[in-house]
Image 1: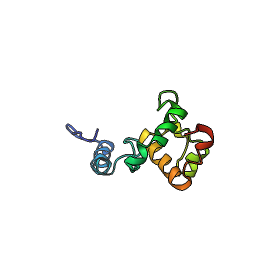
Image 2 (image 1 turned 180 degrees about the vertical axis):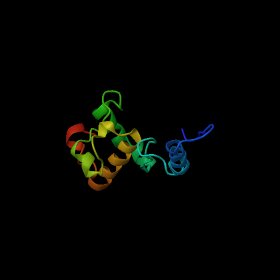
Image 3 (image 1 turned 90 degrees about the vertical axis):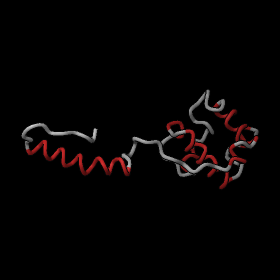
Image 4 (image 1 turned 135 degrees about the vertical axis):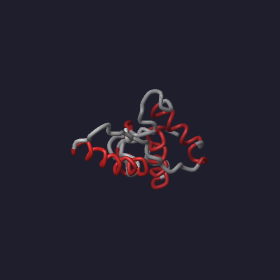
Length: 117
């Protein structure tokens, strides 16, 4: 909570806390705190997101997100597309974006031998 009033005499510690809140909270609101908001990823082109290929991959790899949180089944491809950690821990928007990057670089090759899409 950023707002707060000191009642009566304030100790130096309370004054320091209020001063920090006065400086940090506006910056927090303006810049955001890492991890408190979902990152916004560029949207892949609608033609690709709604293509029969992308839909097929999503269904074969994860049941369109119902069987697995790794929507596109990206394992090694996740890092190749610039992802960090595991795809299953990323938002749907980031997975869409990373899959588009992988597709743009390598075409259907990362998925075709396995998914027959």
